[in-house]
Image 1 (tube, rainbow, N blue to C red):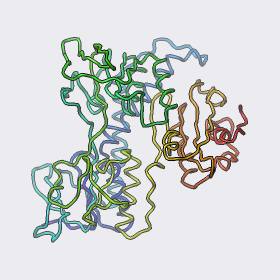
Image 2 (image 1 turned 30 degrees about the horizontal axis):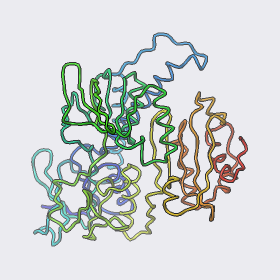
Image 3 (image 1 turned 90 degrees about the vertical axis):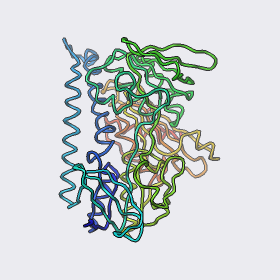
Image 4 (image 1 turned 180 degrees about the horizontal axis):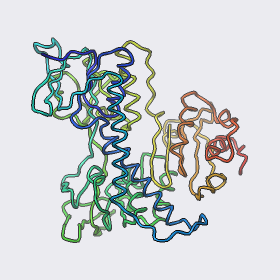
Length: 473
């Protein structure tokens, strides 16, 4: 006998379980189909475990620099197995929390591999899901609406085949039981620079190879240049405008060696391991899309503004639809999709207003357009910048590096983008995002009486700097 429900969700990651909770809040009978653990990539192989490791790396770096705070330490030692143990404890606590939320909201969870099936005796239209349960039994779920939230996985490079020993992605690296002496990171995007920062703080010799002419090439150029400068200052070797040559890969008992081409020059890099960090690809294979009319374009599921596929009772959200591949974006999309299928008022946030965060040391964060993007779109821009070295709380934290940059429209005074690099900026970017969402002007944001001393003062100063009225400079 098939299981019928109002909403079935294929994938129990951040977007999927948030959508499930929202549907349950609206009185819907909900089933989640998850092949692994609730929480998905973010909780088990991405956001949470990597940030736990980054926090341990930050603490270790602070301890090593403790004399600058007037504290003498002796015998500080990195216990990497303990670092990994702490990471697992954080993940497990949150995993238990997600499971509790499922029980609280009376959401049925089926652990197994789901596959969308076409019209059958169970349903006159596609959208039912055949589920192979963990015990090998089969179950069929027949929903009124289906939400596909199958996420993504690390992208591979042909010729650099994963072996879990010499060639890794972030998935395997998160499970390392010991740190390598050296690491080549292929890809200088967000994940690549986070791993570079973390491993460097742990004492690993790091080389980053990036094909573009700068790190984090999708971010504002000034932020990119500053982050690269600070990583190089810490000892990270950065090769931009460079490509690894997979056919040159060699392995021996000491590690790997591979050639790198930069313009007309080729050099050889050697390291204990190589970490692939070249983006992510959607998990859309083997989920039965061929049994539907759903369109796939450039490796992701095509949806409309309300996250509907061409079959209006089937929605798709998160990394499997491309766009902003971030956990909080998936959650927002899940809520918007559920609100739409339930006939509620829908608030779809434009993708450029979703904050982007990079958890290096120091952190970087942004929302809206870069200066170059704004110029390319025909805006006459004006810029406000303010350095962290003029913010008292930043000096208290022991950091002088970084700045906040505001990009505004000269004609309308609208905020077009805000870009930050410095201490704890990932905790500051939400205010800038809210200002853009509410269509505030730099002058209006600058009128707030920012508490002193706090890091948040820098946003007010940067906003005032747009019109040359910053107080602290």
